[in-house]
Amino acid sequence: MMKSMVFHPLLALLLGLLLPPVLCHADKAEPVLSSNTGSPGNNLPSPFVGSGVNPWVINLPTVQVDLSSTTLGAIKTGVVAPLSAPVLASQLSWEPVVGGRTARIRVISTQAERLRFHVAMPDGLSPLRFRVQGNLNSATVGYDDAPVSREGGIWLAVTDGNSADLEVFASEGVAKDKLDFKIDSVNVITVGASVPRNIGNVQEKQYDLTCLSSLNTYPGLEKAASATALIHYISSKDNKSYVCTGTLLADAGATQTPWFATANHCIFDQTTADTAAFEWFFQASTCGSDLTDYRHWITFGGARLLYTDVYLEPAFLILYKQPPLGAVFSGWDTNIQVGDPVWAVHHPKGDHTMVSFGNISALGQVVIDATTGGEHLVNTVSFVYGGVEGGSSGSGLFSVSNASPYWKGTLFGGPEKNYQIGDYSYLNKYYRHIKTWLNNTSTEVYPKVFLNTTQKTTDYPANVTVEWSTTGAVACSAMAIVADNIVDFLTDTRRGWVGSVPTSAKLEMKVGLQTDYTLSCQGLVGSAINSDDSTKKFTVKVNPPTLNQINCLFDWAEKTYPDLFSPVPGQTVVTADPFTFPYYYTYRTYSNTGAYLGVSSLDNHVHYIASDKKLQDVDELWKWLEKSSCQSI
Image (tube, rainbow, N blue to C red; front, side, top):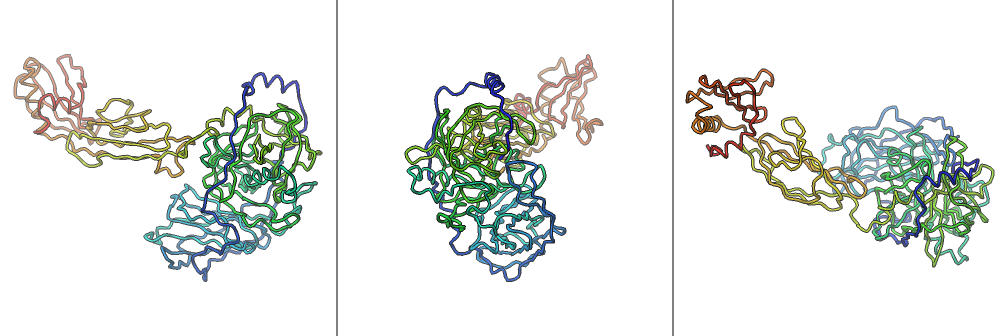
């Protein structure tokens, strides 16, 4: 939670006049219950598939941990400890199991409360699957049973305790010496696991969600809590770990696309978003208990940052992994008025889910960030019960109606000495930037390209048919590289296409030189997670034209244009081009007219020099071969 210090109502008014007007009508979406069946609760048996009898053990030395935060509001939890000697796949003891093989790595840190592995994968390997478990976890947490493909690497789920096991599973057919990954660093978290959860971390008077079951708004608050996640991330600014809060949002089509909102000062760039893990159902099991809800689950693998703004303070993302079964995609509502009763659902200081109640006291206030001195446009809430603290940053503000929650913005911060004042992002001022996603009705937001074409070596010239279709694509572009030169035209079917193309089409092309084609498509949220889904490439290799074809053309030209080419027949010469070696010219010269007729292997174009000695490019060879009926010679 960022601390705001100074209010400027007049400045807010002036700046408000410069911003897009507040919506004259309200947009709204209803909450949706997640139907994802792939994530069990933490009371299920361990899904480790190997015995782990011979793990590779890493004993971390004590690391210096300074928990003072340079980003007020986001709670610093630990540091990233690079391993002096990264653990390579070739060093591990691999155990055969059904469907492949597994290896086990164990890290021990006496000062850690929680731990998190980083796996570096230079080639974004896809056959690997990961499962992690801490010594204080009753079973594995956040395991990944889908192939992972990431460029550079991935931060895995957060584990509880001072020891954690990582099991790596490689499917059959992947040779051990081809597993190019390494464990190169560990996030040592020094706050969290051993501290009693419920009211164990918070510093102010807060209200545990599970203690509010008697309220008539409790069903709606329970759904809001099921849409709320504690975010663990590594900041790109200092390479330290932090926690914030965020909200899973529904869209108008109830598609269960995992849209997610938090604060800009939490997730401010894509590098940071890539490190994020999301802790769901981090709630007390019962009122007053320090035990965690049995549904507790962690998803990891990061998110794609779609929109953020420093002044308005939101961060809007799409998660790379679906939330667990039972999570709720919260409804949302752009109707926000002074005096509205609202609820904050959050993780103050990274504690269990807490709930605060208050009313909106001001819209469009400009506050000064006590850390940076920067200005932010916010809506202000005065809380009657509870309030907000560090770690609450990015959490949702909700109205509750008919047992349903409606999100209305994310927490920026509040005055340093009054935790019962909360400043929230002004949704109506940035709604237009996220409207396309929140009003989505398609279940396909990532593009997938399907391509059929002839991809082989052919005689000159090549007749190529390329046909493509897509799902989830809103726009496609294409590029063709011919003889190392990017083709700069779209509709010329002699070689290919460049620029914007339809999301599905069939194209007939005549190709005269080896050409590398690339088709890339964008979905509602950009390219696909796996680049192979949204980008397809193919190459057409073309044999050079034969000397018989060229001689046939020269003979035809001499007969057709005798006033240009005489005496006849001219003598055919093949010579290297000193400027484009190893390319060559095949040509004839005509002494009576001073003309020259030739073909360059650089581009397979016909060149002509008249008596004025000026070189003319008279088009591609294949066109002249068709005109002269020499293409089949």
